[in-house]
Length: 406
Image (tube, rainbow, N blue to C red; front, side, top):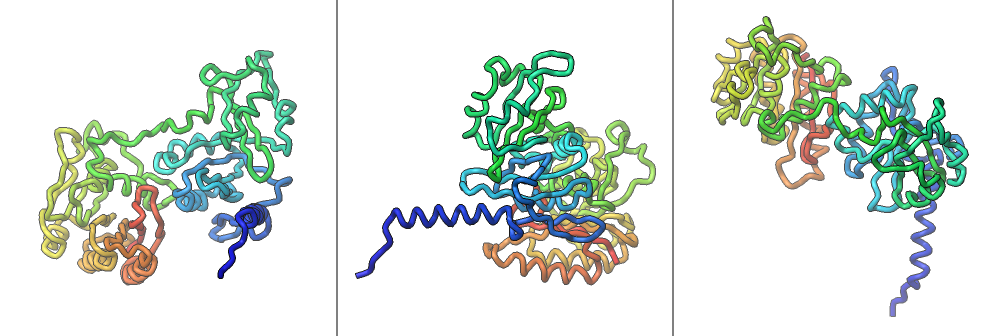
């Protein structure tokens, strides 16, 4: 007859294990981010609670944790102190950041639509305390001009909201009519506290200064993938600014850069590249959903309704190309072979940039890392891999590769 441990013993063991895991979070073996600075990878380990001084705290969706960490690793103007894994599975994660100008970083981050849309909240903090009642002594309830401050209160987790409100005078808080925003985050057995002004408040940080394009322009979800790559200054040689005069007169651009889009249908990538001033050769037997009547710059796209190997003459006639892009829905090895085929034709300029989506079209998603590595090795015959990463706009079965022609 088998015996099992009492329920109370099991609960106590689980509670003890959870506490041990929380303690590890602030030790030398804590989970950490890697910051790339001066082309070197260095570990950044969380400091003990009494020395832990973040300036920006992001409340993020749990499933986007890895992608957001990768986004911040490539930023030189901040230090990623670490990521806090909340023990309760229903709660999101927190990412702690340290920077010389938290307000400016927050303002710039919220304009980056692709990453910002995955963040649930942003807190700017200045002080921390072990005891929440100390909150009142840390706050200045009056401004320099002697006017009384009215706070909108933002907290994490929500369970501490009533406790925070109870420590403030009743007439000093209001959800809509406020002069300042009070940020309070409970993490690592401390309360991190900060105040931002109502004019530059982070409470409305989701409002994007450069909102995503309207549905009539995006054509398909794929549009956002190429937009995320080309719109990010961190991507160096792949970053392309939008010409100011494009909307008025596409033909006034003079000598425009050229790009070839392999597997272009329905036209999302070609549409975006045209909006950035490129003259695009879109190669695909399928139909392109582009309309010059709606967007004049679509006249910069020339559609070749043929397969790649049947389009050699058009490629040679329209080339050489500065960019080659591909988001075709075929196995990674096959898409890489198509890129090598185009490279072998001599239609690409020296140092041409490659933007390629690798797609795992089978159900064996666990084998994707191995398939990916094999595809990258194949691609390296003609391209130097500049970056390989998971875009915010990629699905869980997709991976984006940036390369430069050797």
